[in-house]
Image 1 (cartoon, rainbow, N blue to C red):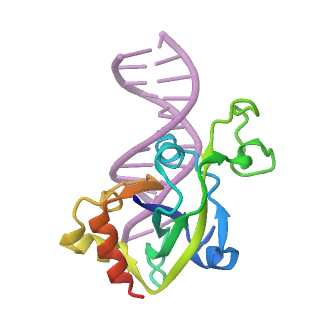
Image 2 (cartoon, helix red, strand yellow):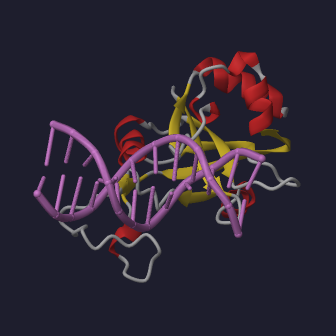
Length: 155
DNA sequence: GCCAACGTTGGC
DNA sequence: GCCAACGTTGGC
């Protein structure tokens, strides 16, 4: 079992959207490192921290809940759709560039763990998301960090 | 809205 | 392969 963190702009697709949908394809990732994690390393059943970026003072950037990897990697269909924001004209049907997995809702926390909380907590030293300028939208999380954060998230 | 940090592209 | 220019991400 491996653990992950995925980022989403809260305004764009939030943990509430995932709760409503129960399951969704995690499309639109257009970064090779993030794609490789999904395509090569994610396994069904892996648990995932759901991070909202571009926070506000009312809804700060941070972790709002937990999801679960619900499929193996498959082609991200949005790369072929000219009307889609994430359309990639370089991609071809017989040679897709971008892949994704499906994510299932697990739970939403009553109180988020904000980026400030994460940076302040010495138990969480070394987390990718703490690094200044970290832009990786799919990233591995150690078991120790995952456990610590889920304890902070409560039930 | 600002701007620092980052990833990608393309000229050479 | 180098690196400047560019577009994007994301905290504040």
